[in-house]
Image (cartoon, rainbow, N blue to C red; front, side, top):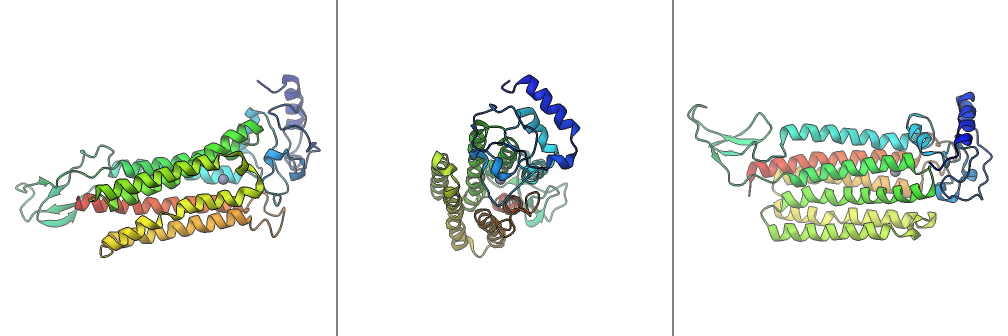
Length: 352
Ligand SMILES: [Zn+2]
């Protein structure tokens, strides 16, 4: 335990005796102090202003108040239930994580991970099964229908890989916003897990698009997947370089992630050239256009730091750019989930 016990008790009794409104006042913390983990024993439980922060917590000068700064780990974790300028950043992605957890549970009931559980059957007339799968229904009675499997069942792992990537991203982001204020070392680790999560979301998003669009062209499918996976790993490595921690390189990092995300237009355009006459291809492309719009607007808002730039201090608790960015990320990820369901049903219906 790196936090002095007696200082903790004093701080805790002080913390408990103060009204909640007093917590919102800035504490006189020396901004020149070391950011080394848990070296400062004073004013650990008060919310402070931007000028009182150590350098590693200075990310947005337009958010003026309500910062947690170098709190002990226990208090940092418990702050998930208190009000500060990261509360909505934590919860927007934590709620997003639970939304995807529920979606994964629902999807597992419709598209079991064990793809042999619901084999497709080839009959005479197109219909839809009770579990949402397209099947062909015979003119014969149910008792005499002759059901024949339609070749190999489509792999579902790319669909579930995307759901896992989205959940990992949202959980890491939420944890990063919760824990990074603890100390510089924690911030360093959590920021890198956050970057890894963003890259995981982007790369895993490619898999349903590429895998199901080009199921029947394994060489093209595998080439795309190899290229995008490599591109994603390179982005992770570059974004982990310490130089990208500085505020002046924040837009560069945003552009880096936006570039890899934007590269998804290549397989989507390829899909439309190859299958533009298919309603599934058109529908998934519409979903993907909405997804890209959500991510694109989110990145612009994130990099521009609006609206807090226009009214510094007025959006400290609610409405600042990072919260808007989070909501747009969840919306974009959900839109891609809808597209992925269409892809999977398309291939389940047609096979290859
Ligand atoms: Zn965030």
